[in-house]
Amino acid sequence: MTVAKPIITNSAQLTEFTAQTRTRMSDVTKINILVSMGTCGIAAGTTPVLKALEESLAAQNLTGVKITRVGCMGLCHSEPTIEVVDTASGKSVIYGNVKASHAEAIVAAGVHPAEGLKVIERGWYYPEDEENTQDAPQARIVLRNSGRINPEDIQEYIAQSGYQALCKVLLEMSPKQVVAEITDSGLRGRGGGGFPTGRKWSFANAQKPKEKYVICNADEGDPGAFMDRAILEGDPHAVLEAMAIAGFAIGAKNGIVYIRAEYPLAIERLQIAIHQAREMGFLGKNIFGSGFDFDIDLKFGAGAFVCGEETALIASIEGKRGEPTYKPPFPAIAGLWGKPTIVNNVETFANVCAIIRNGAGWFKRIGTTGSPGTKVFALAGKINQVGLIEVPMGTSLREIIYGIGKGIRNGKQFKAVQTGGPSGGCIKRDQLDTTIDYDTLVLLGSMMGSGGMIIMDEDDCMVSVARFFLEFTLDESCGKCTPCRIGNKRLHEMLTKITQGKADMQTLQKLRDLSASIKDTALCGLGQSSPNPVRSTMNQFEDEYLAHILEGKCPAGVCADLVTYSINENCTGCAVCKKRCPVDCIRGEKKSVHVIDAEACIKCGMCLSSCKFNAIDRK
Image (cartoon, rainbow, N blue to C red; front, side):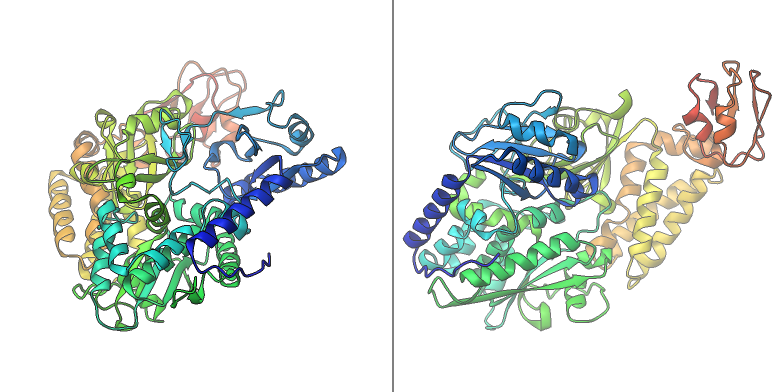
């Protein structure tokens, strides 16, 4: 989209332009049909739904109705998702699991629920809006615009107070005042250990060199994590505006978004947003007539998990092998090309504009004293409602899993939740009332990380879970330091022995000792935290480790070397299991009890999952 470049040199002019944009949009649009066109929505089949909606709108010849392609609404469990909004009253209805055949009914119904469609109950509010329903479990600051605006139309962002924070900063504040505001807000880095954002900015601000850099870390690599992708697909301008604010705060003229090449839609929308921001004068030379210059480029990562670590990321941008370096010096002192550099992740930047618009005090009223604000989580695993959520810090795990996520799939028992990705740890059932904040999670042997939250049930083996995450770390280790390269390999070998029933109690002690050694001696934060899944599962689920070692038994029935399958007297001889067996190891005549050949069985569990008569025993 090409827009005319406005001449805006003060906040009053921007306010007037924003009001005009809002009026122009509301005059044209009475009913706005929002279509979730994030990666997850498109993958679920939103494109044919969008086409059907457009055709239905044309056929019904309705005026004042608009179809808007928006980013992820966070309702991954109900994709494709559609929201129909009355722009005058704000009243809306959200539909889930929409099909192309529903389009005609949706268009005809307007904001009245269409009969026969799945209606989704809204579970969030917007802390910046005047009308809040603060009894809702979610509070959207970071996801404020995601799912509400067209991310490819800068005017829709402007209509939602876009670039007002940047205007305020450039025309009314000094760099030190900006740093002080972010510091006072208590905003902590949302990408890992939770380092105070204002403190990082203050280090860079204090450096004398004129050439400095701002880097947005969009190299999201945790299994089950998709927060940053959704933000960039749904609200890219919020990140660009915040990067410009950060550039002003530290004295940088150049910004870089380091993004995974595997995120093509996020990349495309970022490129569109950067182009539009330049055309409007929000990036480039003499922004708002303030004399401040700032521009942003993209750098594509090749998918190396270790490049999520800031010094490895910087090395990658410089064209070097993506490996961490020793600290100090920290990047805020000597980063990209040896110049002062701040590196913050997507979600951290997405909080900045709201803080500037509303003040540090407003932000601190949300969340907890030590962890102000909200946190975005990607709910995944064995939970009924997977998706993207944003909750105030201090929300309990129970409220997230059983309130927002609606409990465990298939009526199973909750067993554990993994927070913090491969660098995090597992939290068990009797800790469900734990409140989510940085310090509490560390005390439990886990961490906040970027915000992946993987739910596990009674059928998960915690030894195998630890082995899975360690295997991921092994694959992604840069190999630079011995503790990570060799130490984690030895940990993985010991975990494999345990899952095979070949370990003894000495193995368990070696696991503890080596995990502690790696934590203390690895070069970077990723290596130091890599044993966390092992340490936390050993501490929280020691009984499972002991069962594997002392009894030669996997309580969850997952470890193939410790499991046997047999057929009991409930067998009706239907032969379904026989047909599904991939190695043809089930014998028996039709309508008679069958038998499994234990030596030929590969323990895939296909017989168990296919039997409707509870005739398969797993021991």
